[in-house]
Image (cartoon, one colour):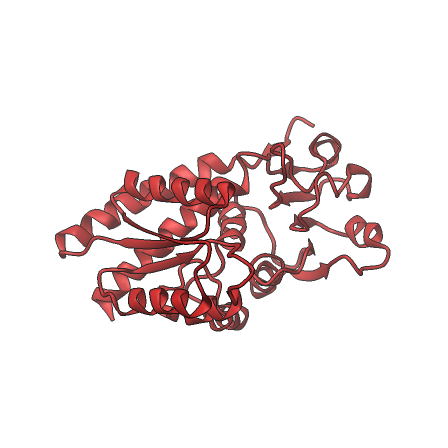
Length: 281
Protein backbone atom coordinates (compact mmCIF):
# COMPACT_ATOMS: atom_id res chain seq x y z
CA UNK A 1 0.00 0.00 0.00
CA UNK A 2 1.48 3.31 -1.09
CA UNK A 3 -0.20 5.20 1.73
CA UNK A 4 1.08 2.90 4.46
CA UNK A 5 2.05 4.93 7.52
CA UNK A 6 4.87 3.79 9.78
CA UNK A 7 4.25 5.32 13.18
CA UNK A 8 7.87 6.18 13.98
CA UNK A 9 8.15 6.62 17.72
CA UNK A 10 11.59 8.18 17.54
CA UNK A 11 10.19 11.09 15.55
CA UNK A 12 7.43 11.59 18.14
CA UNK A 13 9.87 11.29 21.02
CA UNK A 14 12.22 13.86 19.50
CA UNK A 15 9.31 16.26 19.05
CA UNK A 16 8.27 15.89 22.71
CA UNK A 17 11.85 16.42 23.92
CA UNK A 18 12.39 19.44 21.70
CA UNK A 19 9.30 21.12 23.15
CA UNK A 20 10.49 20.33 26.67
CA UNK A 21 13.77 22.23 26.20
CA UNK A 22 12.16 25.67 26.26
CA UNK A 23 10.04 24.73 29.26
CA UNK A 24 13.11 23.52 31.17
CA UNK A 25 14.90 26.77 30.33
CA UNK A 26 11.96 28.79 31.71
CA UNK A 27 11.98 26.69 34.88
CA UNK A 28 15.70 27.37 35.27
CA UNK A 29 14.98 31.10 35.01
CA UNK A 30 12.55 30.63 37.90
CA UNK A 31 15.20 28.80 39.92
CA UNK A 32 13.73 25.32 39.46
CA UNK A 33 15.47 22.30 37.94
CA UNK A 34 13.17 19.32 37.27
CA UNK A 35 14.26 16.25 39.23
CA UNK A 36 13.24 12.61 38.75
CA UNK A 37 14.14 10.16 41.50
CA UNK A 38 14.42 6.53 40.38
CA UNK A 39 14.45 3.70 42.90
CA UNK A 40 15.95 0.35 41.95
CA UNK A 41 15.71 -2.52 44.43
CA UNK A 42 18.02 -5.45 43.82
CA UNK A 43 20.29 -6.36 40.93
CA UNK A 44 18.03 -7.31 38.03
CA UNK A 45 20.13 -6.58 34.91
CA UNK A 46 17.17 -5.53 32.76
CA UNK A 47 15.92 -3.16 35.45
CA UNK A 48 19.40 -1.69 35.84
CA UNK A 49 19.49 -1.06 32.09
CA UNK A 50 16.06 0.60 32.09
CA UNK A 51 16.95 2.85 35.02
CA UNK A 52 20.22 3.86 33.35
CA UNK A 53 18.42 4.64 30.08
CA UNK A 54 15.88 6.79 31.87
CA UNK A 55 18.62 8.58 33.80
CA UNK A 56 20.60 9.28 30.66
CA UNK A 57 17.50 10.62 28.91
CA UNK A 58 16.91 12.98 31.84
CA UNK A 59 20.46 14.27 31.90
CA UNK A 60 20.52 14.98 28.17
CA UNK A 61 17.63 17.42 28.67
CA UNK A 62 18.91 19.02 31.85
CA UNK A 63 16.60 17.09 34.18
CA UNK A 64 18.29 15.93 37.38
CA UNK A 65 18.33 12.14 37.73
CA UNK A 66 18.48 11.15 41.38
CA UNK A 67 19.23 7.43 41.49
CA UNK A 68 18.59 5.35 44.60
CA UNK A 69 19.81 1.74 44.50
CA UNK A 70 18.62 -0.43 47.40
CA UNK A 71 19.88 -3.86 48.38
CA UNK A 72 17.95 -6.93 47.17
CA UNK A 73 17.16 -7.78 50.83
CA UNK A 74 15.39 -4.45 51.40
CA UNK A 75 12.12 -4.83 53.32
CA UNK A 76 8.80 -3.23 52.44
CA UNK A 77 9.14 -0.92 55.44
CA UNK A 78 12.60 0.24 54.37
CA UNK A 79 11.38 0.94 50.85
CA UNK A 80 8.38 2.86 52.17
CA UNK A 81 10.70 5.02 54.29
CA UNK A 82 12.80 5.79 51.21
CA UNK A 83 9.71 6.75 49.19
CA UNK A 84 8.36 8.89 52.02
CA UNK A 85 11.64 10.78 52.26
CA UNK A 86 11.42 11.53 48.53
CA UNK A 87 7.80 12.64 48.95
CA UNK A 88 9.01 15.18 51.49
CA UNK A 89 11.99 16.36 49.41
CA UNK A 90 10.85 19.55 47.69
CA UNK A 91 13.71 19.30 45.18
CA UNK A 92 12.28 16.02 43.84
CA UNK A 93 9.38 16.42 41.41
CA UNK A 94 8.84 12.87 40.22
CA UNK A 95 9.35 9.41 41.73
CA UNK A 96 9.75 6.21 39.75
CA UNK A 97 9.94 2.80 41.42
CA UNK A 98 11.40 0.37 38.90
CA UNK A 99 9.30 -2.76 38.42
CA UNK A 100 9.69 -5.57 39.39
CA UNK A 101 10.83 -5.45 43.00
CA UNK A 102 12.05 -8.51 44.96
CA UNK A 103 9.35 -10.93 46.13
CA UNK A 104 9.53 -10.00 49.81
CA UNK A 105 8.34 -6.47 49.05
CA UNK A 106 4.68 -5.49 48.84
CA UNK A 107 4.96 -3.71 45.50
CA UNK A 108 1.42 -2.34 45.47
CA UNK A 109 1.86 -0.86 48.93
CA UNK A 110 5.09 0.76 47.76
CA UNK A 111 3.42 2.24 44.68
CA UNK A 112 0.57 3.59 46.80
CA UNK A 113 3.06 5.40 49.06
CA UNK A 114 4.20 7.62 46.19
CA UNK A 115 2.60 11.06 46.58
CA UNK A 116 0.04 11.68 43.83
CA UNK A 117 1.72 14.94 42.80
CA UNK A 118 4.97 13.00 42.21
CA UNK A 119 3.42 9.92 40.58
CA UNK A 120 4.86 10.78 37.16
CA UNK A 121 4.86 7.09 36.13
CA UNK A 122 1.12 6.71 36.76
CA UNK A 123 1.31 3.71 39.10
CA UNK A 124 -0.96 4.71 41.99
CA UNK A 125 -4.61 3.68 42.19
CA UNK A 126 -5.51 7.33 42.75
CA UNK A 127 -3.72 8.27 39.52
CA UNK A 128 -5.48 5.48 37.65
CA UNK A 129 -8.85 6.57 39.02
CA UNK A 130 -8.23 10.16 37.99
CA UNK A 131 -7.20 8.99 34.51
CA UNK A 132 -10.39 6.95 34.19
CA UNK A 133 -12.48 9.94 35.30
CA UNK A 134 -10.79 12.12 32.70
CA UNK A 135 -8.86 14.54 34.89
CA UNK A 136 -5.68 12.57 35.58
CA UNK A 137 -2.53 14.68 35.35
CA UNK A 138 -0.03 11.85 34.85
CA UNK A 139 -1.44 8.77 33.13
CA UNK A 140 0.80 5.72 32.99
CA UNK A 141 3.61 6.49 30.57
CA UNK A 142 3.00 3.78 27.96
CA UNK A 143 -0.72 4.62 27.58
CA UNK A 144 0.26 8.30 27.44
CA UNK A 145 2.79 7.44 24.72
CA UNK A 146 0.14 5.65 22.67
CA UNK A 147 -2.11 8.71 22.83
CA UNK A 148 0.83 10.96 21.96
CA UNK A 149 1.51 8.90 18.83
CA UNK A 150 -2.15 9.03 17.86
CA UNK A 151 -2.16 12.81 18.22
CA UNK A 152 1.18 13.39 16.48
CA UNK A 153 0.09 11.47 13.39
CA UNK A 154 -3.43 12.93 13.54
CA UNK A 155 -5.17 9.56 13.71
CA UNK A 156 -8.93 9.94 14.02
CA UNK A 157 -10.23 7.94 16.97
CA UNK A 158 -13.57 9.59 17.70
CA UNK A 159 -16.35 7.08 17.12
CA UNK A 160 -13.88 4.42 16.00
CA UNK A 161 -13.85 0.90 17.41
CA UNK A 162 -10.65 0.30 19.40
CA UNK A 163 -9.75 -3.18 20.61
CA UNK A 164 -7.20 -3.29 23.43
CA UNK A 165 -5.63 -6.70 23.98
CA UNK A 166 -4.41 -6.69 27.58
CA UNK A 167 -5.77 -5.41 30.88
CA UNK A 168 -2.81 -4.65 33.12
CA UNK A 169 -3.33 -1.78 35.58
CA UNK A 170 -0.56 0.33 34.02
CA UNK A 171 -1.21 -0.41 30.35
CA UNK A 172 -4.35 -2.16 29.13
CA UNK A 173 -6.83 -0.65 31.57
CA UNK A 174 -5.61 2.96 31.48
CA UNK A 175 -5.21 3.06 27.68
CA UNK A 176 -8.77 1.73 27.40
CA UNK A 177 -9.91 4.59 29.63
CA UNK A 178 -7.94 7.20 27.68
CA UNK A 179 -9.39 6.01 24.37
CA UNK A 180 -12.90 5.91 25.83
CA UNK A 181 -12.50 9.46 27.16
CA UNK A 182 -11.61 10.53 23.62
CA UNK A 183 -14.88 9.10 22.30
CA UNK A 184 -13.61 5.82 20.88
CA UNK A 185 -15.77 2.75 21.34
CA UNK A 186 -13.52 0.41 23.30
CA UNK A 187 -13.45 -3.36 23.68
CA UNK A 188 -10.91 -4.62 26.21
CA UNK A 189 -9.82 -8.20 25.59
CA UNK A 190 -7.63 -10.52 27.66
CA UNK A 191 -6.55 -14.12 28.13
CA UNK A 192 -10.10 -15.25 28.96
CA UNK A 193 -11.71 -13.56 25.95
CA UNK A 194 -13.52 -16.02 23.73
CA UNK A 195 -13.30 -15.62 19.95
CA UNK A 196 -10.60 -12.95 20.16
CA UNK A 197 -10.15 -12.93 16.40
CA UNK A 198 -13.78 -11.92 15.92
CA UNK A 199 -13.20 -8.86 18.08
CA UNK A 200 -10.00 -7.99 16.25
CA UNK A 201 -11.72 -8.29 12.86
CA UNK A 202 -14.05 -5.45 13.91
CA UNK A 203 -11.31 -3.14 15.17
CA UNK A 204 -10.44 0.16 13.49
CA UNK A 205 -7.65 0.53 16.06
CA UNK A 206 -5.76 -2.32 17.73
CA UNK A 207 -3.62 -1.79 20.83
CA UNK A 208 -1.48 -4.83 21.57
CA UNK A 209 -0.54 -4.95 25.25
CA UNK A 210 -0.64 -8.65 26.08
CA UNK A 211 3.05 -9.39 26.62
CA UNK A 212 3.25 -12.34 24.23
CA UNK A 213 5.56 -12.23 21.18
CA UNK A 214 3.89 -12.23 17.75
CA UNK A 215 0.54 -12.89 19.42
CA UNK A 216 -1.61 -10.94 16.94
CA UNK A 217 -1.41 -12.03 13.30
CA UNK A 218 -2.32 -10.08 10.21
CA UNK A 219 -5.02 -12.62 9.39
CA UNK A 220 -6.90 -11.44 12.48
CA UNK A 221 -7.01 -7.79 11.40
CA UNK A 222 -9.55 -5.76 9.52
CA UNK A 223 -8.16 -4.26 6.32
CA UNK A 224 -6.85 -0.76 7.05
CA UNK A 225 -6.67 -1.08 10.84
CA UNK A 226 -4.32 1.13 12.84
CA UNK A 227 -1.98 -1.07 14.92
CA UNK A 228 -0.21 0.22 18.04
CA UNK A 229 2.11 -2.42 19.45
CA UNK A 230 3.00 -1.76 23.09
CA UNK A 231 4.66 -5.15 23.50
CA UNK A 232 8.37 -5.60 23.95
CA UNK A 233 9.58 -9.16 24.22
CA UNK A 234 12.94 -10.90 24.17
CA UNK A 235 14.72 -10.42 20.86
CA UNK A 236 13.14 -7.00 20.15
CA UNK A 237 9.84 -8.64 19.20
CA UNK A 238 6.48 -6.98 19.71
CA UNK A 239 3.08 -8.46 20.52
CA UNK A 240 2.03 -8.30 16.87
CA UNK A 241 3.56 -10.26 14.03
CA UNK A 242 4.91 -7.25 12.21
CA UNK A 243 5.23 -8.56 8.65
CA UNK A 244 1.73 -9.99 8.38
CA UNK A 245 0.11 -7.10 10.26
CA UNK A 246 1.98 -4.58 8.10
CA UNK A 247 0.24 -6.01 5.04
CA UNK A 248 -3.24 -5.41 6.49
CA UNK A 249 -2.72 -2.21 8.48
CA UNK A 250 -3.03 1.37 7.27
CA UNK A 251 -0.65 2.47 10.03
CA UNK A 252 1.57 0.49 12.41
CA UNK A 253 4.21 1.06 15.07
CA UNK A 254 7.51 -0.80 14.64
CA UNK A 255 9.23 -2.70 17.46
CA UNK A 256 11.70 -1.45 18.47
CA UNK A 257 11.35 2.25 17.71
CA UNK A 258 7.62 2.62 18.13
CA UNK A 259 5.88 3.05 21.49
CA UNK A 260 9.07 2.51 23.54
CA UNK A 261 10.94 5.78 22.84
CA UNK A 262 7.76 7.79 23.37
CA UNK A 263 7.14 6.09 26.72
CA UNK A 264 10.45 7.44 28.04
CA UNK A 265 9.78 10.90 26.64
CA UNK A 266 6.39 10.96 28.40
CA UNK A 267 8.12 10.21 31.70
CA UNK A 268 10.34 13.24 31.07
CA UNK A 269 7.32 15.36 30.13
CA UNK A 270 5.45 14.37 33.28
CA UNK A 271 8.49 15.26 35.39
CA UNK A 272 8.65 18.70 33.78
CA UNK A 273 4.88 19.08 34.25
CA UNK A 274 5.31 18.26 37.93
CA UNK A 275 8.14 20.80 38.30
CA UNK A 276 6.02 23.49 36.68
CA UNK A 277 3.12 22.77 39.00
CA UNK A 278 5.32 23.54 42.02
CA UNK A 279 5.61 27.15 40.89
CA UNK A 280 2.10 27.63 39.49
CA UNK A 281 -0.03 26.13 42.24
